[in-house]
Length: 437
Ligand code: GLU
Image (tube, rainbow, N blue to C red):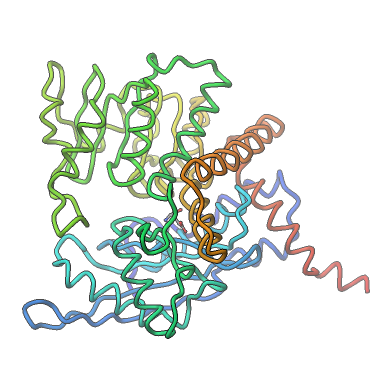
C-alpha cells in the first residue's frame, strides 16, 4: 500500500464533520459510520505495453457509504493517486450527494499512472483491464463510476463496453459520463462547470454584482475549469487569469476564453484524450500587459473570485493569509485545507465549498443513470433546467443555514448533508430505536 508524505488528506477531510455536527443533529451512530469506508478494493492492473513489456499499475475503488443509495463517484488517473486520497474523495462524494439531495452514496476510484505517457491503445488496455479487476465490486445498483481528473467520456465508453462484455448484456447504467452515442447524457460534459456557474449567479443576485466589474482567476483548465470560465465569460465576467499543470497567464484586460479553449484543445495528443498544448502559450493573450504566472501566483492575484479547479490542497496554511479574492468557488475537490479555512473565514472571504460548488457533475451523472434505466433521453434544455433547480435549491438551503448558524458555508453544507444522512439512518433504526422496543 502506498503512503503519502503530504498531510493526511483523509483525516483532514473527516475533521470537517466535527465542526458541522454542532449545527446538525446527527445520531452518534452516523458519525461513527462516517469514520471509515464501507469497503476498499485494491487491485493490480497488468498491462501489455506497445513495446511488448509488461507494466503493473496499482488501482483502487472505495465504496464509502451507501446510506442514501448506490455509491457514486469518479475514477482518477494520476501519478499521485493513493489510498488516502481515494478515501478522502469517496468521503467527499458521500457528503456531496447528501448536500444537494442526489439519491446516491459516495465512492471513488483511481489508478496510479501518468496517462499522458501512455499511447491510446495502452490507455484502452489499462482501462479495460482495470474494469475486469473491479467488475465484481461495481454495478448499476451498487457502485457507479464516472470521470474525474485525467479521465473522460472516451475512457468511460471503453469501461462500459468492457463491463457489458463481462456481463453478456448491455449495462449502460454501470458508469456515467459516457459519450452521447453510447448512452451519455446531453449536458453532462459541462455539468460541473455549469453547476458552479449557477452558484455564482446566485451570489450575483444576492449581492447585486455587475459581471463586467468582477475579475476572476481560474486555476486548472481541464473539463470543469474550461466550462466555468466559458460560461462566466459569455455572461460578461472578466476572466483575467487561467492556468493548467504547466503554468498560467494573467491578462488584466480579460482572457479571450473561447480562443484559449480552442488553442488548449487544438493539439489534443493521443487522439482526443489529453492536450499537449498549455494555456501558457495562448497567442491571443500576448496583448499588452499579459504575463506568464505560476499556479501559486494565480492563487494570490488581486481578483474578486478565485476558482480552484485543479487538485486538492492548493490553499493551505502556507498561502491562505495572502489570498486577496473575496469569494472562492471550489470547483476542484478539496482545494482548501482545514487550517486555511480558519484563516479565510477570519479575513471575511466567502468560500463556496466543493461539496456544493462542484456537485453539478454528479447531479447530471444521476440524470444520465436515470435516462439509461428508463431508456428515455432528455433534451439538453431539460438537463440544464433540472440541474439549475437542484443547484439553486441546494445553494439557497445551505446559504440560509449559514446565515442562521453564523458559520462558514462549508460548515453549513456539511450540516445540511449530515441532516439528510441522519434522517436515513434513523429511518433504518438506531440504538435509541432498538432500545425503546
Ligand atoms: N468526479 C466527479 C466529482 O468529483 C463526478 C462524479 C460523478 O459524476 O459520479 O464529483
